[in-house]
Length: 514
Image (cartoon, rainbow, N blue to C red):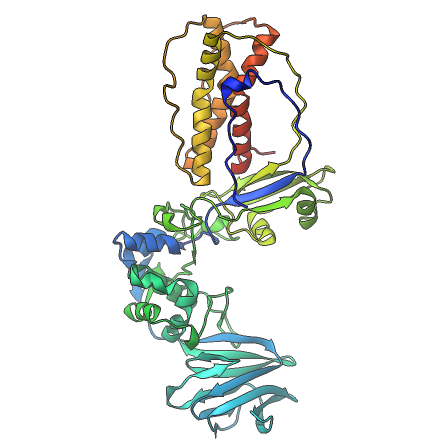
């Protein structure tokens, strides 16, 4: 469920309320975050935003793939595995087909439906009535006459079909021209409707997809690419859309090169505002064309600021799923990437055992949209607090205490609003007006009470903004000041709401490390 903003208790009331320990609740951990996908390379929502701002495809690609250039390439035929490790494959063609078994001359079969099955050491072709039409050694290929399409297990594909023997079963492969392959890929990877108002986004997607297909082909074997997310989602002829096909035709043969070689042009749905460097997502050396970049164009994504569906998991369930051996007591981010996506994370169990894992493993196990996430613990019983009894303050003393904490509270609210995708709250009318006289000693002690809160808020805001944390200022110890226990307790309560919210914010951002 969405993370709901927690209210800060008005500071004037905090001084008058006696502390009471809340009842214990079940401990849960909520994983909230930004972006959708691995975050490396081009953001598809970012490409759309840039296209709407007037950028062309080459400018879009230059932003996300630093140093890469768009250049032409030759024609290529791809082998895409569309049926994997199956007992039988159904074929249908509206025109006659030419069928050839390994080492044998091709035979012509009439239009209609056929079944391909294992037969002994080879493959048999059966007609719709189950009668064997031909048998031979694998692989077997089928091509529709007149450039027609062939339906493979009910889905139509351009190009030819090939069945390969894999143990006691079969793989079905679509042998297809690169450009026809892309026509079946683009509508499954990006909304075709973007072509109505942002055609440059589809052009950029076509060039990136063409580059990725060529760079990610398997070495050897009977197929080059998968038809799913292991390569790119491929829908064949049935998956095509005129708007994405137009983008393929406009960019025909154009790919991204770096150092004269076609690059693996990774892309994902939404960056959340900043892409990630490849080495922080997958093992391997840093690639110069896959650096982290700011992505303000991604703002149109529904996942840019915060996921609409954060994931909440109970402490016991989290411990079970990550083999901690006990309910989880704390989740601590150990390392973040540039964006800042989670690279390494630790789960601390109630029994003293801790488990370290990767952000990618947490994303996969919990079904998170990306590895840019922060974690909030809820239901934690509050530490018992002493009731200091009632303390009387003059109106002037109460006002000065409120003002001392004002900047900290305001900045906490602003940072939290930033994370939750809400406008920054407006300042209260009349804040800070009027003059109140306090001794130097009273003013200094009030400043010290809020010091830790202000410092931690500044560090949290810097982390959200992608800046280094500010260096702590000098404490400037002005000598010893004596306060009564009642005065000290009131000052502590004044800053209580700010400190509590800063601590929660730091846990969400992963700034607290074990």
